[in-house]
Length: 380
Image 1 (cartoon, rainbow, N blue to C red):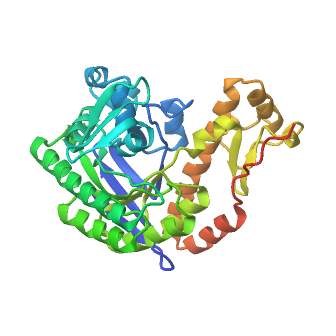
Image 2 (image 1 turned 60 degrees about the horizontal axis):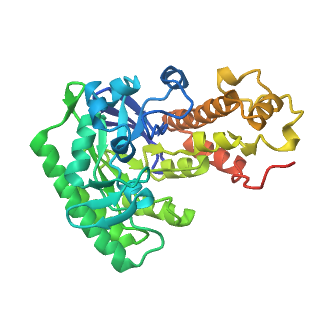
Image 3 (image 1 turned 180 degrees about the horizontal axis):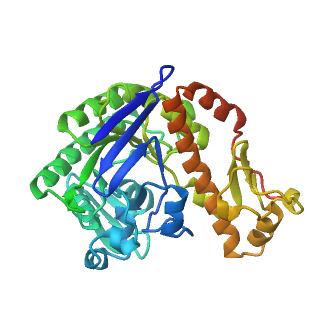
C-alpha cells in the first residue's frame, strides 16, 4: 500500500509512504544497490545507521552465484544477508541482455550463457518470479526485455509487445502461487518500456496498469539516451500512473537527475554510482564530484565534505587520498560511506522540502550548485 502524504504545488513532486512486508518506506527514497546480496564494502548495521530504508538484490547474479539452495536454507535473502528491512529484487532481465553471452530471446524466455563460466542457463517470466519468491524480497520486479539505445521504433514496438506478454505471465504466476515474505504477500512492480518513443511509453503505462501491479517502474533508461530524453520519458509516463501507487525509476541517477525526476513525480531510485565511483577514489559533494586521487588533495586537511558521514569525520582528504593511492581498503570504505550518506541525505532533504512546501527552492539550489562528474584522468 502506498500513501500519498503531500504534493509540491510547483511541480509533480510527491511525499509518500510505502508499506511493505518488512517495514515502511518513506518516499522519495534512494535505495543502495546490493547486487550480489551486499552493498559493497558496507556492513548492514552501517546501512541502518546511514538511514537506508531498503536495499536491492539482483535475481540474475544471485541465481548464478551462490544459487538458490543456500538462500532457501537460510529462509531467503533477508536471512542470508542479515538484513531485516525491506528489499527489492530486479528480475534479471537487464543483466541477461547486458552481461550474458550468446543469448537467444524466444517467446518462452531467454536462453543464455552466464557471464561467469559460460554455463547454459534460462530465465523467463515464471522462472524469474519463482527465483524472487525464493529470495523473499518485499518487492519483486517482473521479467522484461530492455531494448538497446538507439533502436528503431519498429524494434521497440515488438520488444514492448514481448514485455507485455511476459508481464501477463508474471502476473498469472503470482496469482497462482501467492508468494509470501515475512508472513505477508510479496509485492510485484510492472516495468514500463518503450525506449524513447512517446506513443510506446504511454501505451506501456496504460497496458501495464490494466494488468494491475502493486507499483510501476520506468525501465530502459540510463542506457545511452540523452538526459533530455530521460526526463521526457518521466514526463510522459508519470501523469498516466495512479496517484496511489509508487513510481520507481530504475538505475538512476546523478544527484541532479534524481531531484529533477522527483520533480516529475518519481518516488523511488537506485543507482550503483555511490559505491562504484568510490572504488575509483571519487566522492560526491554538493558542488559536484571530486577525485581524491588528484595531486591537489595531497595536502588538503579538510574533511571530504562539510556534510559527511560521522565515521568519515576527522579523516582528511589528504589521508583518504593516501589510503586510496596505496590500495588500503579503509579509503574505499570511507568514500563509500560518505557517498551513500550524500545520496540518502539528499533524498531525506527532498522529503522534508516537499513537506515544508519549499521543494522548488531546494531543487533550484541542488541543480545550480552541482557540476557534472569530472572524468579527467588523475593528476600525477
